[in-house]
Amino acid sequence: MNSVRVADIGDYEGQEVRIQGWLYNKRSSGRIYFLIIRDGSGFLQAVAVRGEIPDEQFDLCGALTQESSIVVTGRVRADKRAMGGFELTLTGIDPVQVAEEYPITLKEHGVDFLLDHRHLWIRSPRQHAALLIRNEVIAAAEEWLRTNDFIKLDSPILTPAACEGTTTLFETDYFGEKAYLSQSGQLYVEAGCMAFGKVYCFGPTFRAEKSKTRRHLIEFWMIEPEMAYATQEDNMVVQEQFVAHIVKRCLENRRDELLLLERDLSRLEAVTAPFPRVSYDEAVEMLHSEGREFEWGDDFGAPDEAVISSRFDKPVFVTNYPTKVKAFYMQPEPGRPEVVKCADLLAPEGYGEIIGGSERIHDLELLEERMREHDLPRAGYEWYLDLRRYGSVPHSGFGLGIERTVAWISGSEHVREMIPFPRLLNRIYP
Ligand code: 4AD
Ligand code: MG
Image 1 (cartoon, rainbow, N blue to C red):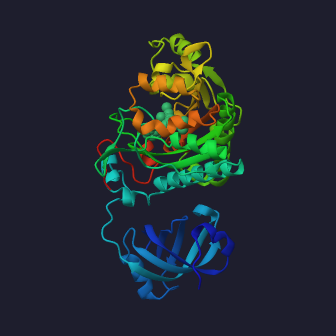
Image 2: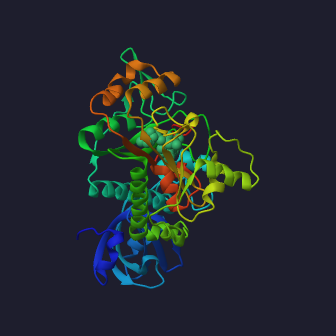
Image 3: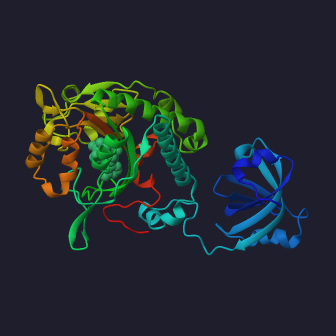
């Protein structure tokens, strides 16, 4: 008999099937065992009745511990009360391994304990659901980019130069020379867009952030599209379509997981293009009108972003940040060099920044001047300056942080649970 996936069980009503999985939980009422089996694709209740299966098989059910690996056979029955609408009447059970006492019981555990057992915790329903939503976000993002003619161009992880400031660099030794783990693939996709027009990279990025917040990971995943001959205005139009598509596909394909996480779906259904835009100047006024102390020229913190985004029911672009709080490569606004052509996209409901993007400086001299101001050593950037020497054009791009986006879509407080194995300030295990 071929094995079937729990997710497909509805196609087999009335038939006998075989399922390969693990025992998630069990209950007994004397003559009956209710086994909840998970197989990675879903959860299913199997019912074993004494007298209907051989006694030694029935007694085996009693010996099975949580997370024992088992292969079962049974007949599929529709049952409105059952989760997923189906139940299995057990005809046979074959333990593969009877698990030792499982550390994650169905009672509450502290988060440090759970993070220490992350390799097992990812089996639990809420973690499992969040990681399925992550998978959907990534698939939807790449689907949109490919459908819209973006070429995937991988950027290196080991790099000679900083992209996002020198304070969060992870330094390593590269055969006697200094190298850094990539903070962003942007500089390389800038080269890529001059060769292919529209490109993106997707990979892990690294920031030695000393801050311990709910929104910061040391290693996080970023998807970074970059377009030649594109203005910051073009850039924002791409971003709102891109994000709306990701949300729509999660609503279509991951409804069960969103509901399991108690996500208010109406909040996600509201996320359609276009998105509202406010300038940094207007955002500062909003903060002042709510009585918050904030000085023009500072960067927004998480509470500031929450105040701004709470005024909208869609993600909101905050445009034209002060030049001095942003990276060296951003194009100044004509006639207003104190601000740059950029936008951060803030997710609604206080989830904060999910995208950072900008138009890039395309003039060689201006870029050289900015690099001097930022004290960046020229050696690692000569190739980047070449892009301004040989057919330079206005170009724009952005980076979407996967874990922040998954946290918002799934309605989760912490980015640390939005990645299979988080790297945090004090954690590199497991
Ligand atoms: O705003 P950031 O720093 O922008 C860049 O890196 C640009 N080079 C991207 C580009 O234009 N190609 O980071 C982009 C996004 C943020 O909006 C946020 O979603 C995420 O990356 N991010 C983090 N996510 C988790 N932990 C961290 N420490 C993060 N830092 C940034
Ligand atoms: Mg940013």
